Amino acid sequence: MHRIFILTGKAALFVVIAALLLSVIVPRYLDRIYYRGPASGHYDGERFFNPDGGDEGSRPPGGGGRLGFLWRNLTDDRPIWPDRVPVRQASAAELMPLPASTASASSATAAMPADLRAMPMRATWIGHASVLVQLPALNILTDPVWRTNTGPAFLGPTRVAAPGIAFDTLPKIDLVLVSHAHWDHLDLGTLKRLWDRDRPLIVTSPGNDAILRSAGIGAVAADWGRAVTVQERPRVDAAPDGRRAIRVHVTRNHHWSSRWFTDRNRALWSSFVVELPGGNLFFAGDTGLGDGRWPAEAARLGPIRLALIPIGAFRFVPGQMASDSHIGPVQAAQAYAGLGASSAIPIHWGTFRLSYEGYRTPPDLLRATLACTGQTGFDPVAIGRPVDVPALSARTAPPFPDSATVAGCLDTPRVRAMR
Image 1 (cartoon, helix red, strand yellow):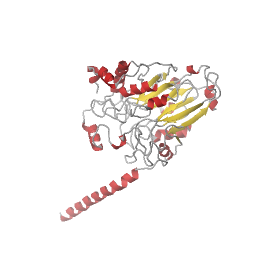
Image 2 (cartoon, one colour):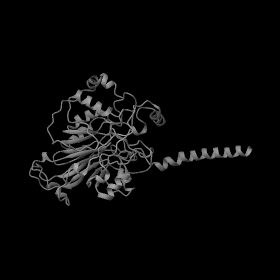
Image 3 (cartoon, one colour):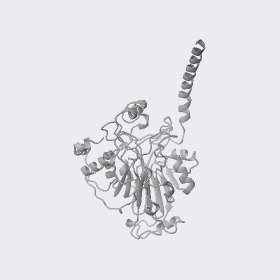
Image 4 (cartoon, one colour):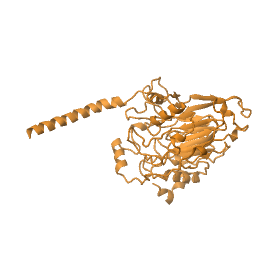
């Protein structure tokens, strides 16, 4: 018996020592340095930050510590989500056909109509923040994630909706936009498959390129306010500026980043504006509203034909309408107004359960908000169903109402019943 006590005491001492060592060693191991550069208005020499305030990565949404956040997710009465959502995956025949010759960058203009406003554009929501946007001879993919969970190894929320396009059905991808380092947006497995197969141009913001290079994936990083040229196109008579480049502008949004907790904000987050014939593409990435000025900043780069705006993972406590890190449907409608886009597709909902709200709450609340604000063209789409994007229009939207007016309009039994 005495020997058992001695062995038990030694084992307990070993566990305590191991825990102490892990508490010192593991955080240092997990705190990676992805970027080094001069300090700026959103980088302090070590970590990035939101210049409009907020330190969202230092605390979980909804208040309390991280253990409290995890405990609430395990024990509260969150609305029930479906275990599986049926998805009709797009076939190759449903995706936009390419011109017969796509060997050169200039082939993208071979099928261009004389009136660039009629330039075909097709978009397919793959799920979460992954969208395939197609123009003749140019295929763009945003935050591609084909994995079944959103964390390291087998950890993280599990996908309830299959990808809207089977990976092997994807056409050759020319351009990939990677918004930030979170696992549900930067999936090294998917990006490695794309890189090995297609060698696309991958554009991201500083720090994320280092994460990609660690997996043998090439990427171009640009800071906020910088642009990356995708391809030059020859003169098109209908283009008033004669010769233009198709460029990706890396633009500001309001978020944070981490892959291993202690590497918080070592890499930058961003949105993107892609200059395209027939009207620009805006991809918000993952964002809170912040100072609310970033939509107008994106709009100044040219008229936006299609905007991809998140509406989900906004309710981390009952009744919450938005968090510092994520916009909900109400703020998404506000961002849509600020962008002045002709049309928009709501993303970042209905694929991975990341927060408190019910499965159908984001699109249902968006519809109610648009009815209150008089907006059109921001319609939910089904995962895997390609949609033809309307031509750029001079949409004159009504002024976005103040928050009190919107809240009053939404104060109905139907909206109050949404969880």
